Each structure stands twice: as C-alpha cells, then as structure tokens.
Image (tube, rainbow, N blue to C red; front, side, top):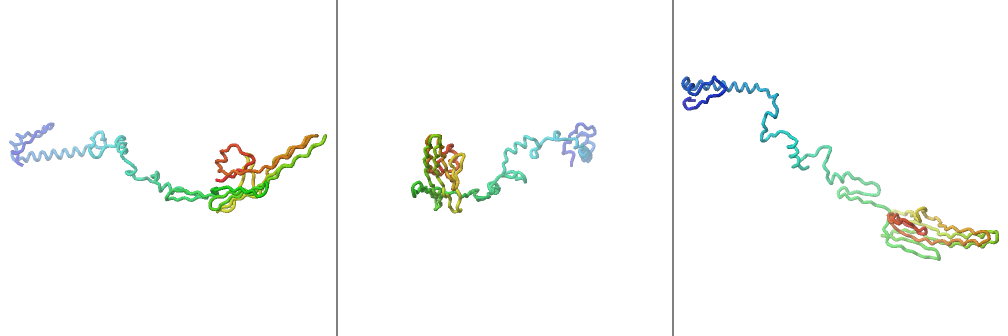
Length: 264
C-alpha cells in the first residue's frame, strides 16, 4: 500500500496514533501504519472476547427483523390467524369428526345402528292399525277384532253381557231379596303379528286394570226392612278404544265401561 495515495484519519481517544502527515514523513512506505493498525485490531478482538455476556439481557440488545423476541401480545396476535388446519392434533384433546362420533355410538336390544350413515333403527312388537271389526253374533255377545297391516290382528275376544236380576219384594219386618249383579266377561284377548302372539291389557279407569278373563261387576243394592228389594243393575256391554300410550295419558278422565287398548 502506497501511503501517498491514502488518507489516514486520526483515531480520537488514543494519543499514540500518529497523524497522517507524521506517518508520511517518517514512514514513506506505509509499513508503520500497517503494523500499528494490525496491533489495534488485535487489541479490539481481545477486548471483545473479554466482554461478559452473562450479565447481558435482551434489554441490552435491539430486536432484529427476523428472530423476534417473545411477548404475550405477539403470540396472541399470531394465534388469532390460526385454525385447526394449522395446528397438529394432540394425543388427548382430539378433534371432532363425524366418523369419530358415529363410531362411538352403539345400540343394543331391539335396535340396530349404521355407523356409516348414523341412522338408528328401533324395532318393536306393536302393529299399525288399519281398521276395527265389530261382529255381533247373538244377543249381548260381541267380538272385537282390530286389523293391522300385512294381516296382523288384535283379537279382543268375546264380551258376554248378562243383565241383572230384579230384587224380590220384602214383607213387613223382612228384607227384600237383593238383585243379582249383571256381568260382562272378557273371554280371550291376543295380539298376533310377525313376532308371535302377545297378551293385551285393558285399562278401564285409573284405579283398575281389566285383564283376560276378568269379570266386570256392577254392585246390586240390598232391600230395606219391609220394603221392596232393589233391582239388580244390568250388566254393561263394554266398548273398546284403541289409542297410543301418550294419547291415553292425555285423556285425564276415563270411562269405567270402556276398554282402552294401548297400541304403541
């Protein structure tokens, strides 16, 4: 390096660095300056190596453009732009999918479940009612048959009605004979469908359940001393009402001479 072609500035804060004119006068070939500056560089490297970085924090170093310092606001701002498409699924809190939900459902008993479509099917022994046939065979004898789809039937059976017998007149000081009660008898009751034959229960009121073969009674009234006996009450020919459980519950009040058939 030719010293005559370069300007060598004075380094402030150091009194052992010659000025440019002094260096040119004493060392025309520039070797002095070269050696001197090399020595200064070595000193600076040594000083930098001796800096104790353990005492420094991010407060002492400005943030760069790429590797940003952590802060709650910076992280929150970044998360607001993310969706589950950007975040890998963990091992415990798994994402919800249709396949996972449907796969977690199981059905037992009178039902089946399609995990692909998500449809649950429930089967039972109830039948759809198509029409009711009321057949009168003889006086006071009626047969009730409820017809369902595909030949399914509910045969309510035969109601046999016997009228009450009048009481006998009494004499002075003697009671009249009581009238006999009339009766209505349910002979047989069945439901027949694809699942076989089933027993039907009939609900006559809130306090009493009539079952197959049970007798319906209307109490007679005893005669009084020296008066006529009171006639026995006639037997009642019961009627049939077919309805669902919810419709039956919604009635609130019930006719004691009606059989309520619960279907479905």
